[in-house]
Length: 220
Image (cartoon, rainbow, N blue to C red; front, top):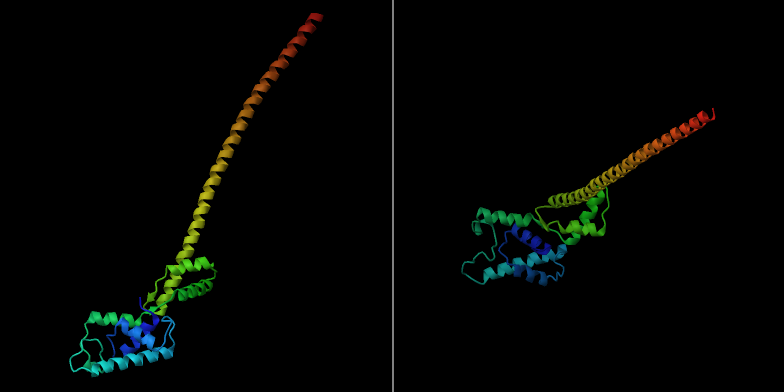
């Protein structure tokens, strides 16, 4: 994947009519302008790299009278070979695209989550940033992609919580149903015992009444 130094230098050269440079050319240019961090070049380093490659392209064209095979192309549109439409589309895509670093993604994730009204932990921020691509057509697409990634993560968290509620609610319903069933069984058992006890009591009362009447009759 291209770095910011290469993307920016390539875009500037293309706008000035220069193209066809190789990866080694950009690496050599970075070394020449002492750009150690390819993802964070200064404007001065970019300008110096562009000048360096333009001079290099011109010098290579001047040392040979033979046709150059699209390695370095300089000058107006008349001097450039006709480019196929699909090649032009690829070139325009490379120029318009932006490349973001892991730190860029983490910072935007943090800023966007705050703008949406909630804070993320460091681990959550890293997890979301890892699922975001590194290259986009423009900055607007980058922001939209980050926002969508945050929303997807939040949706996932809410889904987990909702599932937990449903599971706990089902457990609670089963627990209440089980306790109600046990209570009903105890009430039924108690009712049966009471009926049995009342039957015994009534029988005892009748027996006592009969005994008393028998003694009274005997006394007469």
